[in-house]
Image (cartoon, helix red, strand yellow):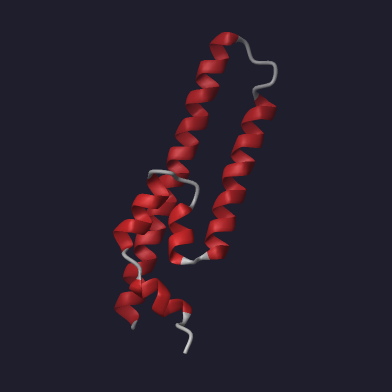
Length: 98
């Protein structure tokens, strides 16, 4: 018998999913949880962030370049934090419901 999506999620360690979404970032914890939709959404957001940063920083001078890099890093850290929190809450929600 094949386990359901909820059984797989409930069996996963929440702290591992959170750590994988923070340390390598970009939704690696979703791969651990086998949550493909959440992974692809996170990947699309990160890709859009990279593309937007590259397009907006094309003609930036040296002073603006450092600021652009800082904004880019903060955005990726924010994405990692949100995805880590969501991954941990998803495990908690599934375990409480079933």
